[in-house]
Length: 207
Image (cartoon, rainbow, N blue to C red; front, side, top):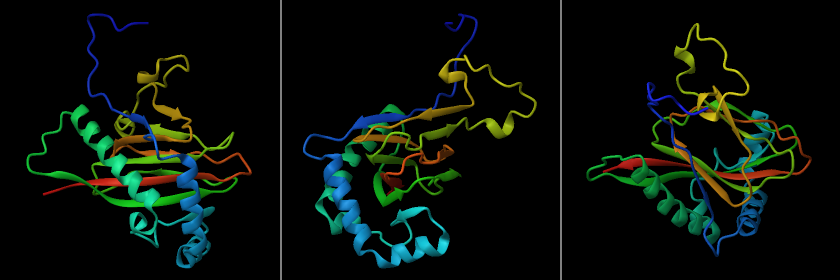
């Protein structure tokens, strides 16, 4: 039902969803991810020691764009998207500029997931989805006001999206999602035997 005129809707949270530009395909990025995984012995050892259900370059590599041109092309596309996101947010950044200061690979096997978290010290975070098999884990977004709701009653299942406490997105290969870094999110378990592959990133505001 529409919001009656006697009500106002405040403090919306923007999620930007875009497609990869022409010339950069999920296949290109998937090949680049597997190439990095194959050569990143330190990263695989870290994943094994931490019980990570797959592979991530998060703790081992910080120079993916220098290692494969597909990642450099991705950052170029992300820079355009981040600028558009900042415009949609009406941010006044003065002399500051947005810089992609971290970019990492996530390869999750069957049952692999990421628990709820935020990205401190960043302003924009997001993920490029490379391989999303059927039953791959959805992205779960949490209402940022949840911790302050205290005695608020539960919301009816049929409530519209903007009234729900949680929102689930099932991204498709080639999609890029961006959100503000304070937004708590998690990756639901991968229900497929095939790998769920994504590339996550953070943007910082620097002078």
